[in-house]
Image (cartoon, rainbow, N blue to C red; front, side):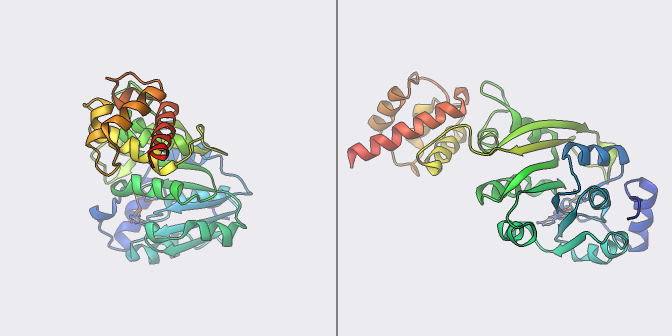
Length: 294
Ligand code: SAM
């Protein structure tokens, strides 16, 4: 297998010029040009010879080369058809890489894991297109794809939100959703000059390790996430008011009051003060209220 030769500015520029490639902003194209960062991503993901890696957005194949050198097999999903001939050249020597031309949001990743990995957990590793970071991550979690971990480059500010806890300004619906499914670990902060072109904001590599089961047990997962969304849609309001205003939930003032009491929550508490366990208790109490009133 060849040694990775991309991941430096000179070689990246050569490839871009050869194919007369122009960056598409709408696809979030910021290519990595720093070998240390590439090595760090592979190390943080702990990619080994048994692993099937799903890469989202290979670009010109920079991270793909590093992944292919470390993994058993890499499946790389790229939306931009202009990159297909480039990938054919840059990945020519790597016989364990399969490039799929598709929009990752339309790929049935569960089925892919079933077909290509016998249903065993896979590792997702990517320098994500930032315009769809949250939809990609949430759809992988919510569709219950067997995942060992996701090690992804995201905006620094998004990484901070993913790992924030109650009381922090970064804490919100994304923190709770991510932490329900995974354990976040910030692997590296990555400066602007590691990309071509430079993004407008700082980046970070975050590793989300899949949990064997969620840290809280809740009777209705959908209600838990409905509550979380409602609480943070109006984060400056008290939880009581935010839930009363959330027409999609359809609870009366009395039901909310009773459930909050049953969950041991003070009347004037705000959603941003609640832990995941407290949201889970409240979801169960509200579910029970509804059952009693039916
Ligand atoms: N992995 C390369 C690197 O690190 O240099 C490129 C990363 S770049 C930030 C994001 C890549 O995702 C681009 O190649 C872009 O074309 C691709 N992309 C954007 N939207 C996508 C989608 N919906 N499905 C699959 N790939 C997508």
